[in-house]
Length: 361
Image (cartoon, rainbow, N blue to C red):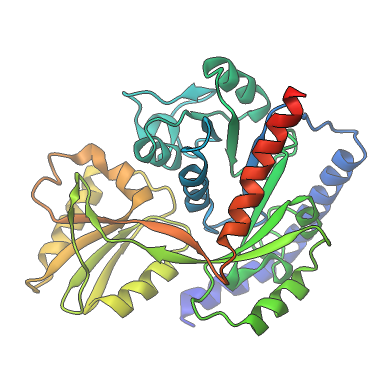
């Protein structure tokens, strides 16, 4: 553990009184929803919520993508996100001229990878859902991105994500820990997905985690790992780069938790250099110049710049500046462990199918 990490952890411990106050506020808020002093709106429409209890990267965006891959061939499904760090306010539906600055990087990524899927943003989901249904009247389901803690809308199917290395039952409240909602809120989830697990996770360890989570009898716990795809050029999907032990990589990364990605590069490449930025960082021309300068300092012949899909949507505006740079994008996806992916898929599709059936009868 380096000095900066030790200092940060020590500083967060000193903020324990603030964390206790925050926990009390969250508890009172949830109690008011539970007792119906604050109202949760229910829609006569299939809403699938993807969320977590903690801040940071638990894999929400890849899970939304997983659901879009699963559902879009079967039904008309849309997404609704807050649009974190966008430069606009209010409700917006993505179109052919939309940029990441207008709707945020994650919704822009959904829009680019699934051009036939309606992608909307709106801070007030209670207002945005009816607007989306009015704009796309043939919708059959909506995926709510990062909405678990926003109880103004009561989704019919809640997918709660928790990271293997920081499972919520062992976490504490902000700012001492990473929890932004109380642990008891996990009882509202339809399923719990433990993400970013090691590929060789044992059944014994799996059962140990399930016991610690204490799920309801009808609450299924799944486990996934991060599966990386083949890097593709930022402006040309057909131009792929197979990573080899000869490669030297400049990693340009502005995500909440880059550790799994860095571990992956340690295994697959000769070495990597990192150019880290804050989560959802808005890249500037000065950043691009720094990236170019650092890349030119790498002496190896087999060298590339590698970035994440979320970072790529914020870098595409520099098409001219990046034209002569070998910048590649590393795709990721959830891969279910223990052969339980089909069970998860069935639970999701059955929810929509049964919901629509009940609505018609």
